[in-house]
Length: 385
Image (cartoon, rainbow, N blue to C red):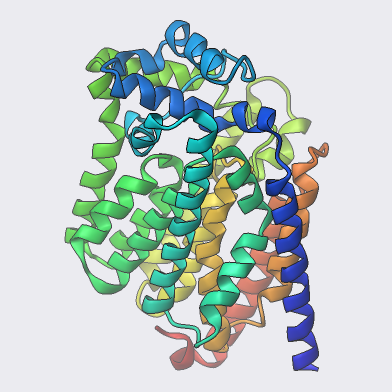
């Protein structure tokens, strides 16, 4: 029975990989030129040409995006992230836009593989786990969106993995580098900082805070305080509070709420979830280390006030940790849950009325959490890590 289930799992993964290859491989030139990659590429080109202040000025960024994309992209779309996020794109600006897009896809693939290789080294699952995990990550529909948009989420995943490496191995430079990368989209960072604080790893926490501050203050290079202000207003005007298409919980309930209430509720849920995570982490940091790390990685996405589909590749980290817990016999097999979530993301990418993946992720979190607590009560020494 077990071998039959394993064969079914491999078959499903293979089918999703093939589907992903078809989706990304058949992407049109127009789709590539209108993707988010063009925004970051244009901002990086302005930085290379000595105009960092212009990356937050729509009247300068918009016409450049139109010219580079051959009028394929909406010029009203802003660059609304820290300046540091555009820096990896600067070398790519020596290449034509579409060639640079394909090079970034290769870089993204390497970053995803590196993240899984580090996890396999620090939290091994077995000899065949790495190729299977890489196939599963490529099969995950969020990864299709990542390759299709040319976004930065692979950098975020590497940052999250480095933070877990710092948490496990007490290396301050990992904490600083991880927070610098994850701080490019800072809404995902606090859950990982809570892990460091709960373990009383104050040196790691200080290094992580420095890395996060370096990323967060990078807009100062685009005109000092006015550059920082421009980034904030650019983000607000871009509709960061418009949560309709989020793959976090607020994206599910937002169609049911009027006006600015979804934004307020989104940030309130985020704050409440982080407070609950902090309480749980400080109470059980040593007895439930792996479980808390898996919980933190899930909370970072599920309760984020802003989590678009491609950023859910960050779930690769709690997915890996969930299989570590399975090997410890702390939870039942998480494979059915992750396959169901992948199917839900496919539906969500079709823009339904209500986002399904966050609801399913919440249900799985509750179900596996209860199973974990029951087994932790019955076999506490086996689960402690």
